[in-house]
Amino acid sequence: MDVGAKEFEESLPLLQELVQESDFVGLDIEFTGLRSNLSGPQQISLFDLPSEWYLKTRQSVQQFTICQIGLSMFSAIEGEANKYVAHSCNFFLFPTTFGILDSEFSFQASSVQFLNRYGFDYNKFLKNGIPYMNEEQEKKIRHDILSGNWRVRSSLDKDQIKVVIDEVTRWLDLAEEGDWMTLPGIAGFQAFEVQLVLRQALHNIWTVLKDDGVVVKKVSKQHRWYLQSTSCDRESCWKENIILSAKGFSVFFHMLVKAQKPLVGHNMMMDLLYLHEKFFRPLPESYDQFKQNIHSLFPVLIDTKNVTKDIWKEMNFPRVSSLSEVYEVLNSDLNPTKNSGPEIVHAISCEKYVETKCPHEAAYDAFLCGSVLLKVAHLLLQKVHGIDPIPESTFLQYLNVLAPYVNQVNLIRAGVPKINFSGPDYPSIRPPILILSVKRWPGVSEQQVYHKFQNLCKFDVRRLTRSQFLLLTNKFKDARNVLKEYRGHPTLPVSLYRYWRHSPDVNCLLQ
Figure (tube, rainbow, N blue to C red):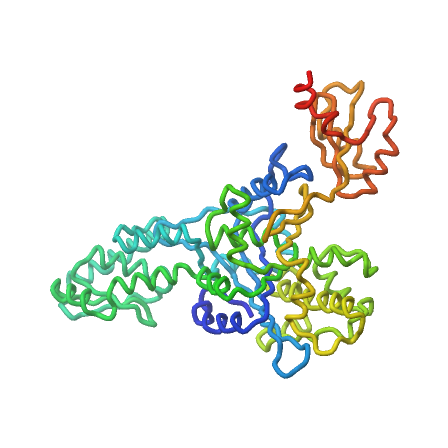
């Protein structure tokens, strides 16, 4: 089901019911860009501590925005053993442009090309995107609207408002009290803006929003005062409704938070950063504060990338890289519990996914996340009990067997492989750092060192001294191969890095 701005408010009660009745929610997000083209020390690296990785990535999240969110609400079907129904929804989003809010964001060419390749509809994003804002933005717009200091800031809106005011002013000169006119084709935020501006600029009119547009009525100043004081269309209540509409998808985000359902994603670290920045609050500078905030919003997180990465080798499954490939393997005969695992069906509104694969459509990927979770949990449960089929598995049993993976979110290219949102991060299990001592190659750069070794394996390179470089890979066999090849090399000897022996700071202290 695709949901844009026109359908969103009508869908809210149903969406709230689906979330509240679900066992868990699958999540996927598509962005206008993934990572800023930072250079040098600003690039993410295997050397980065989680806090360093966070600060670098925070900049990208502030620069780009969300174009589509997919949610898939999974519910066990009552009376049917181990059978689930998935309600999957695509939400096209566009930042709120209202009053003082006029967000700036970037597009990354590679991300646009990637989504185009998979048929992403940019018209729905740009023309019918659901508005949203975070709590800080809401606070600003609420203060301005309720205090009467609200102003139209968008140049496009200013031109439209000017035309409307000119039209109404000309009509007022000839109209009698009680006469009315309709401004057709004005809806959504434009209707709110028009009414606010007209009411502020002209004290002898009253406005009402109808299905066919904004109705303007000429009234006396005394009658205007009476309407403002006693009408069920009191301006204070009316302004609260405007703020509610301006919040858009953020209203549903807070419903999702309040429901406290397990949130499931695949490689979901970037998703969590964007959820925090766009709907909750601007990302804090403190990495620990970010972790605390996410844990309070979503106490149960499950990253299927982290779970499958842990069990994949043990099950002797073929190596895969994408979510859709993981899903295919778990649905194939390679999965020993394929025939006894949970049955998953699509809700009526999502029937296109029954026959059609839609990779990188957010709702479809959210459905894949939830499906992978159920199938992996069944595998783990079978492993614990040692029998297959397992009689009448429940989601609570699945959640219990997944306990070691709860709140452990995969981290790409950093000093640790995952982040623990419910406690201290685990120590690194990366291969050891190697040190390269360059001889007879004056002025060598990190980039040149990288290119020198790239045919053998890919290292992250960091300069230690003028002639020494640290090398780090995420594969133990690559570290062993380089040590074997270059340990006694005449010009590029490589050895294990020892902090107390090689650190310039320690050497300086000892000297």
